[in-house]
Length: 273
Ligand SMILES: [Mg+2]
Image (cartoon, rainbow, N blue to C red):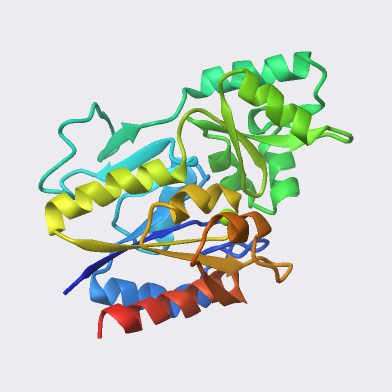
């Protein structure tokens, strides 16, 4: 049987854009678990946040934090490990680091402020303010501030975004857009999918990969999976840039976790009959 591996975004996809619930996706989540199909969370969120949701979902699979910055593999998960890569070790995980250290991103942010951009990073604000801005609980906001490889930017009024993007590129860094504009190094969700895909193949033979997301930061993931799926955003649209850049993408009818449920159930029906 062809083995499936599912890579999923969190914010706006598996988690509701505003309430962060994944209840509407529970049926599909249970079916994945019963069928032993790996679900790899691939998010711009921090490791602390993803570990929190992994726990709530009783998910035991690897995950990818901060837009590909860190690949976390539970110790012993792969028999044939990624021995050729330098890894860090923490809290029972082998970690493949692909991101730029947070300190460097912070330095870049300060430089951008010095150039007159009215911007703030997550580390500039209190967890209380972050909770107000995002709708995260205050505990979750604390976890969202534990960043290693990616700085989300809060834009002030009248920031020229194209000028800001040019300035970020000029510093040799990259940006991506989820709910926020994120400053990152040379990492993205697609590279992480490629690395993990190779590990699954090495250990389990031929696999079929699915990538499900809702936004621009999911494009590198979409371009590195066999079956890309875009879910509807809370305003009812499918992301315009995603639709332009990814050909042959499946589109959900439902919004966020409802779309996840519908499309992942469909994939399971097709591949695990
Ligand atoms: Mg998203």
